[in-house]
Length: 252
Image 1 (cartoon, rainbow, N blue to C red):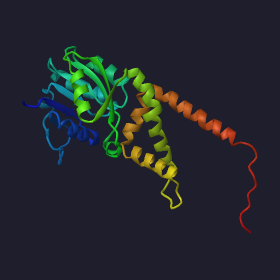
Image 2 (spheres, rainbow, N blue to C red; image 1 turned 135 degrees about the vertical axis):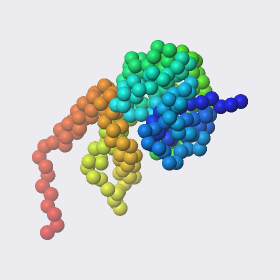
Image 3 (cartoon, rainbow, N blue to C red; image 1 turned 60 degrees about the vertical axis):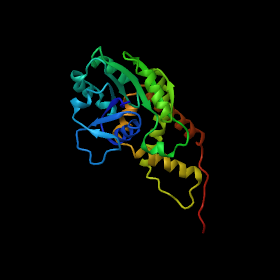
Image 4 (tube, helix red, strand yellow; image 1 turned 180 degrees about the vertical axis):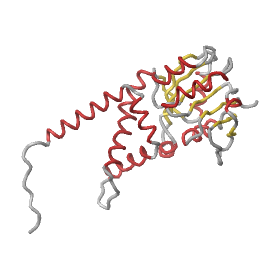
């Protein structure tokens, strides 16, 4: 039986990685503003209008780019099409898809909680969040089955619950990674295992585009509370360390 077609809109670093994963189960076409020299096996780059003729369309674009992308693709989407976002926040893109996509378009919210770097390092099943926003064409159960077959652990979560949990997991991880980077920390020959792991967090988060960090913090309302909680905790630790500093003399 011929494989179903699926399209990936946005062949950046994550988009190429995601297209390669999907190509194990779908006949994948992708589109990008630039010509991609090296594509994953089973993935073909095609013009936007051709990609949007696929019955399943995955959006792998920046969170902040979603409104513009949705306006651009909306006129080409035919009945029978389901659009699946892969944004790292969920409330904002879901609202935008409901607002800007045609009523005949199916909508599924999706967040793969991993990327090219973390997927290589994990030995457990890769977590992915799904939510059937407007499952007009019964694609939700199909994606649950396909993702499970690809080695993912599927969890169902509302956009609101996702954003709260993501703020205090992924959001705080990226915040700490960027803060450590601003401190210009370097490997050390006396570095402990804990310090080495901190450097790994810094390297992994800073390997993602700065745009992702900004979007994670700006387009998830719950990250504001996370940052306030972080600041309060830092202030409490500073207060705990307060008082007169001991006088420490160097060797004479």
